[in-house]
Image (cartoon, rainbow, N blue to C red):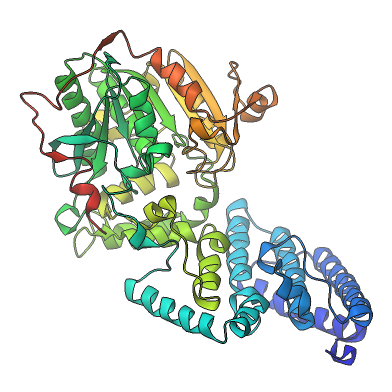
Length: 566
């Protein structure tokens, strides 16, 4: 590359002014948003200074050894090919400068908090999509590989593109490497009960004796339950069985058109409430322990509040994993929820939709969640699969992530309006569910609450707020784990990875809790297991058969419902 082809300082200044003017016009077109003039002036000045410095550094390096400084701190441009290609390196550095400036502009926008969050989200989506790494002509790594393989990588990438177009989504893993019941969801057990919404799975004991109070898992209905039973070495279900608990799990049905009219009340009454009664009957127990994960935790809490209103308290202890009860802070998902968006859902798939209730398609949900982290869950695979022709490796968690589920429109619309939009679950008596006024403060059983520190779906401070919502609970234990929404939960004790924080104190403010918390290495699972054992009751002989005379085995685990595709 001839140094004369590099832009000079005057060019960079003019480009900065044009860039600033264009972006200013973009802001003006977005619902009257504006930037303070002093902020805009400073951003332009900083942009010119940084662009000039970038140009000078590139020219100096090129004159020295014929290369340009490689972008640092961004894995998309960390390959050697970017450093060896001055034009690509310059494109990457320019992109990163523009990206930083755009985000600074988004931060400076004048408006309410929600509007600013939406602007930041939209700008970040555009920035991530506009990366030169996503374009074959600009991706130095992909071009170098094409030369190295004499075009074979491009041919392979085209084949994978055609395959993904046919299947309707970007492949994040080798989906042919997994099969539910063969190498994921393989813990031994049997389906002992089913209705139109769920199957109840009982798992084979792995100890000679079990605790007298059985354990019921209520997973999220927006995903399939086997996130809790991926492989034997990272299965929460198997771990719980190994600790001497008689474990039952709700396996939600993947709804089709026949279930499109199901409501939130249906999911509460014929979900955990029905499952609790069946588990009690099978085990011959007056009380059980129960766990809810994510939306499953919201559903379980609602069910226990309904039972409390009826004068019933069949659950000895409740565990909530990455669960929202107070929806004041819903993280990045908040940008999708307002009155207009909720009304749109109600008009199209809700109970009173003109064409009748419909389904929220699983692929719509999966796409939404993927674009919460587009670089990791979208563009990373676009580049690897199509530009470089690299087939994604087998990964059980990503296989589960792509195994999406539908939701009945009325149930989803109720949940969206009364929790995410209006935050009414925490307000005593505000809601009526299953015919009774709902008051979660009437739940008195001990509660174990787990949150993940880097969770972008259920912010850990929002999960901590459940300690205030459940103020009627006799005893509360809160544990914070490292990592995110899924990886933080699926953190096997045997791997001794990451860390977790504990604190016997329970101040009202989450930051105050963290300030005096103790960080400990390894998984949070043993902490929870020790807590759960204290609520299991006495040890009794493990059952030798599944179910009971009334509830006989229907089929082996993991059952039919979990195999149904959206």
